[in-house]
Image (cartoon, rainbow, N blue to C red; front, side, top):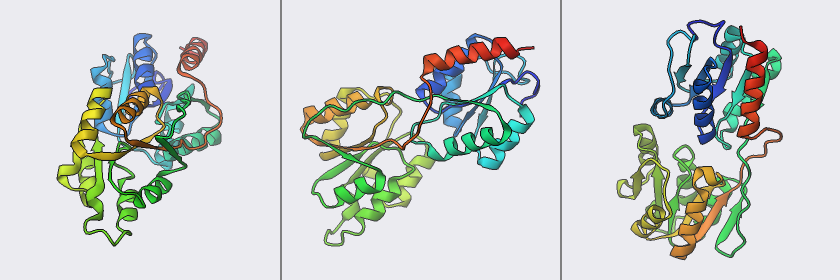
Length: 279
């Protein structure tokens, strides 16, 4: 909880480049805010960004590390009574965005949804577009060659279950190679669903084109799987690396999400609201 609820005037759900930039922006402008990250790892990244963390909410930021369900989000909104809630979560974080939107609607709280600009994918035969993770897994199960997954750890199990259906291979999961964050939970998720230890790279981005090419060659990959995370998520470097390495890219489309503003618009809205409501 905010130590001084009267001074904790905003709530910011972070977890992206945009969330980090807004945290620094609000810290630099001495705008009291409670920032929520899904993990301690995310909170530490914010601390390394140079924000001023406060214990009582009178200056700088209050950081909360840990996932919140709908009930917990509602409790925070009721207790803090923020001027606005800012949703700067990942474009694929559907569950938390849905919960935040619902809680704001039910409490008549202003919601600023920060949307990352959609990136137009280049035309070319080396890119295959799929609607979701399940469709990408189904498509690749029918192909030959190693698959380099750069989609995080939370949905790796969908690929594992789909590949295990291909029983005519001696080792169906041997083709799956992953790059995840250097967190024990991420690595354990991969091991639990059957990914080989030797097929796991645990590293923190951003990743350059050269680093992506090195991973592709290391795994002898024929396919690279990525979500459409935009340039902020390293999409350009993945596409150029795959093209130079001569392999196919399988993209997973963003969830449908209407509305939202860009980060510069969000900054203007935050300043306007703070000037209007500050004590």
